[in-house]
Amino acid sequence: MTLLFKRWTRNVPVSFMLLIFIVMTMSLNIKAQNNKKAENAAFNEKCLKCHGQSKYRYINPESGSEVTKRMYIETIIPRDLFAESNHKNFKCTDCHSEDYDTFPHPGHLRMESKYACIDCHGGDEAYAKFKFEEIETEFQSSVHSTKHSDDFNCWMCHNPHTYKINARSDEKIKDIVAYDNAICLNCHADITKYQMLTDKVNPNILKKHEWLPNQALHFKNVRCIECHARTNDSILVAHNIQPKSKAVRRCVECHSTNSILMASLYKYKVQEGRSKTGFYNGVIMNEGYVIGANRNYYLGILSLVMFGFVALGISIHAALRIIKRKK
Image (cartoon, rainbow, N blue to C red):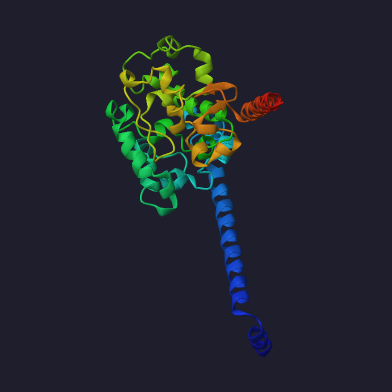
């Protein structure tokens, strides 16, 4: 057998053997990753057995009877949302104490510190493109950080059990707007959550924006951070939330060729060179709502066709006039 293998290897190019080795290595890595994901999913199911629903059951060791209780809403993890999140392949104890593996959970775990995004993603080349360090710097300068205690961290806006980054680069702008605005409204439209952070009265969002023309239309098509955060060219989503006194109020800031939306909401479209789909000179039509000007792909083509006919008509008319003069 060994002799046959040696003879075969003499006739097989080294590059082909290297390719086989690479393919086999990749297959083994993928298999190992899938096995790891399956193990983590099975482990997490032990947690989700209670935390994945509105009630849980356990056996009272004193009486021996089964007890059913309601799960606190803050500790319920929706299975479907977790399955779509960016952290779905991690074990619960990758972020939470391993002592949670036992029930009842030790009481001191309630005081457990929560990780911030930078604790895991900072300084890691695999996540360098997201620029977590720069995001952290921006957040530290925002009103969310300067006006509140250290308890206000990434988790307050980005629930690690449900957060998914792909929602920020979706093809449908309105889906991005709805997803991101829901993050803001999670506190700013909920008095119970808002007052966990401050003693101030929760402002009425609609009343505070009475000055805004076509208010409902703006809320559906523009994110809160477009007007309330300082734009940053180097990161995808701005995190430096400004005081209300610095919020954008001038229509021209958005409804112009140099619209700030080009550097925020539509940034990923610009980066991907979406001009080929009809966004000429930084002009964007957002599902019928004009931003910058009033040209989209189909209107642009129609305008060019009409311009062509007009130019052709003028040329024919001029040619006929010249011919008539010569006669």
